[in-house]
Length: 342
Image 1 (spheres, rainbow, N blue to C red):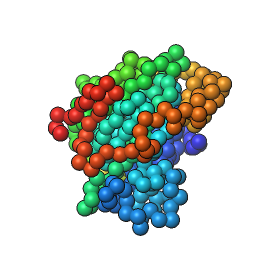
Image 2 (image 1 turned 90 degrees about the horizontal axis):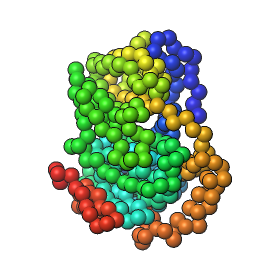
Image 3 (image 1 turned 90 degrees about the vertical axis):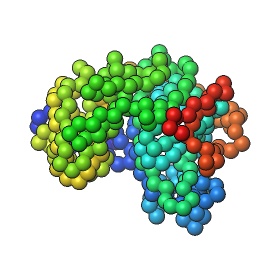
Image 4 (image 1 turned 180 degrees about the horizontal axis):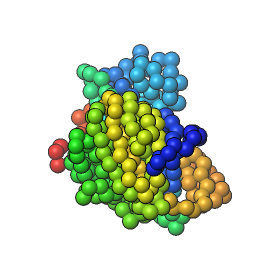
């Protein structure tokens, strides 16, 4: 857990640094940002064998030759694993994700699409990063945000939804491009499709991704009263937030009721703003499970250990689609949805 630095003045309450995994505040639990430059793919949509030799395959978090394999042993990514008791929002700004879950839902999304997964109860899935370009490199930029849900909404139904990039609100103002992933901003709005979600406008949850060219600025008014509000500078060399200087990998906690302006004083930058009213309930967390008590978490982990391979309906735990599959999602009832642009 990162420690905040000395309190700055003005609307900025605290400042710290972050790396691939971001510290967050209630209702957000965790953010993981993956940025890799994968080589061309082979017939398995995997890196060439000579580029993965000598790695700790299955747990490769060391960036070598520009990329990590994570838990993948053939295709990079995350083979079958569990989520239990929270929601995830995933944005592959660059690159594809192939996913399969234990209910039979599966698909491919990427290049600006988002996926909402409500894992209120046990949810098993895999998320792999297929290298579909066999001629050139396969860079990716993937952000996954985990959002808690109240205790009374846990251990209920699960759901998975893909929102195609053409359906996501985008605001462009004074050269700044703001992708509205959740909440309201300048007349645009969107929220989680799950009725169990806390990621609703009524809860003050707002998730914005900002592309700020050099020399641009943007101003934000107050957030919802009582909300936690954090700004993350993912790329760029220098910016000013009401007198506080920040750079790549700096995080600011900002007064929810303050107005503040970001001025990009350096190179082109990407920043994220996460806001939301806290759930403020005592919970227990271990590994992939967040429930109401340590006893519940232990019982859930035991269930996962005993049942994960029994409940998995596919032949492999790191399943991917064919190279030319395209973007789609197929549901357990046999229905399928593809973006209009496909």
